[in-house]
Length: 607
Image (cartoon, rainbow, N blue to C red):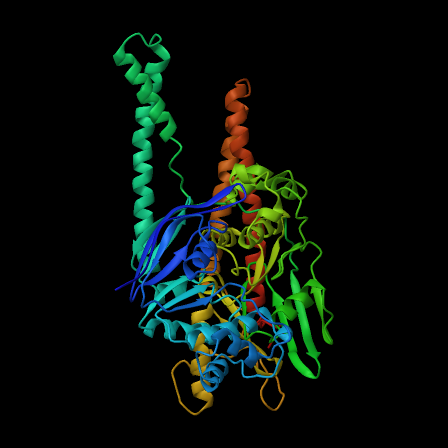
């Protein structure tokens, strides 16, 4: 059964044509994930389909059987209303109070008498979600339902949507969520909709094939273009019908040559030199209102650490980051930061931006040119690599979408050449293309990275250690990403409840037992990648030194050939830069090896 059909939908804002020709049919049982870069019109399309916004052109055909539940990205609320009053207002009397209370309790929002104005953004969204999920619907329209949600709630919602008999149309950047819930992916490209059958993995495969085919077509068109260009240059002005037709053909090919656009982007790593000492946390403690959020936490952050920080909303994750940044003073303990450390902090709240400032001016105030592994790039080149095409450079910041502002803020953080990155919920409000590029960037980033995130895919993709906030302000360390943390946590909980499992020993690290005595922190050790690098780095350095020596000899022999000399000099400079990086890595790895050999643990203690 077709629940809804959108035909040739158009929407314009100011001078920008956001949606040009959107066509979509939603059948009963469809679970559709809507993707696209920030500012492409995803939320606008959801509002139009939900009936919350009028389209400028086209039409929406709705079945008489259609019953919509709509969760906006930022639900409206009455500040003075209580949680229960607001939830009942959302459902408009369509659901009994006891059902609403049941859903609120499942979503940990059973503080029914608390005022909405006292809640966090994530808590307000949970109130709206409870109201949507308890109604009798056959089409759920969800705009970023996982944003600011704890992972246990995300997993609960996942299960609900998998078992839901109706249809779902949703926007989310959570790739595990897309993978497990959807059976269709629709992507907004240049104002139109491209549909893919299957879940997120199937979408990636199909899109890659489509991009490769488009590139092949572009190569054929380029060859034809070159041939026609040769003819147009060497043939006299059109004297016959035949030649006039060739001129027309050339003009058509020329007009078509810019139509292919590969949306994938890359950025070269921007960073500054990092010394031996990074950040050392000693016996950190912090309480608010009699509640202990961080209890006696110690850790030495290493040069190439990739640390994920997880826990329920309000447990103290952001507080820990702010303590490291010096924005919050701990009640006990201290933070020591190395002299060469340059922190890039991407907070949950974007920095203040002058709304009247143009995008290019905002970036140029940070740096007109930045040095990357690919050489020097101008501010405009960096913008283009961050999916801000040239026509957007002169746009005022006030005209950007929320996601575009977050992307611009992220670019600003990276352009300041940090050597330690602290990222607080970096995946909120960023599109999947930007997240993919950020992940690739962090793969090559030569410094430490600390990440607070509820995005399970993002954590699994990047981190090698996980700090989990547990009861009483305890921060427990696990090796690996989010999935491994969950497996070890479950094994540990089974062991504590008397169920013996083979992996029960793998769980705990930094924590304290119930009688207050410190448990042993785990010993330092190489990651698999570090071990491989340690085994080969001496040979790598010798090879580079040999290549540089050979180039120096060749330069001596060709001192009179200025062109060859310039080329050899450029090669030598590149190899010397690579050698410098290898020497820094050699120093770090051998220092770590010494600490491992003497039995040092992650909290700095030694047996």
